Length: 304
Image 1 (cartoon, one colour):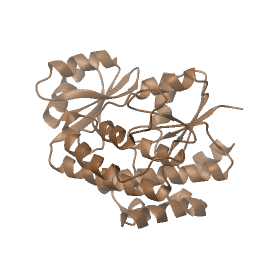
Image 2 (cartoon, rainbow, N blue to C red):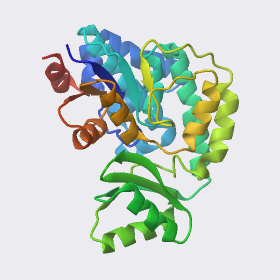
Image 3 (cartoon, rainbow, N blue to C red):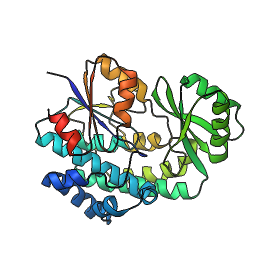
């Protein structure tokens, strides 16, 4: 039997129409969206059905919509008898991972992501920040260019050996991308509204910390691999502090994948919109089974 980890998609993976097939297929998946809509006071199913790509990219919408899509996919695979021994999420995906691991009831998880999305959305509105993926360079090479660029721009997502995401002031991100282009390297702007995981998000982290202190977190029933540490999280004594720090700290996803493989995990199943994380696994690990679930075709493939 394969040793399975569920991976949960991050912000930027959203697209119009996501989750609709899963909602129609599974009453449990539909109930996830009903719960989210009730907790957040917005019709997430309708937004996924009718909102434009631009409307979906707004932080206050994309975060809960992606999380609901991820938990709908989780519901479908569990209904099919697929379970995992560990969970890991990329940035926003850690909130779906917490719900999947039993750290928070689903209702509380959606309330919590509502506070996070609102705090980050307010912070984003007050800054001129951006993010871009840099391809074909090591993290060290990316950091060197950022250090030499005028303004504030830093590496924030360590996604694979050949992909690092930078964030910072929009002008500084653009200047760094020009340097990378001159080096013959490709960059891609991210569909996000701010410089996530950088110091520009500190006001959001401070605001969110106060809200998160009102929640009770259980110890996970599955191994929980963390962006902050790049490995299995052992200390759950101050989750509000962890989650606030998470907003302004790098995502060490490459280290997480290495730690998961070292622990014997050989099946990686991404739950949520898109194939970003399964693509990163493919580029990072050899000899492992990789899949994703976002619609009926991918669900049937995962079920086998």
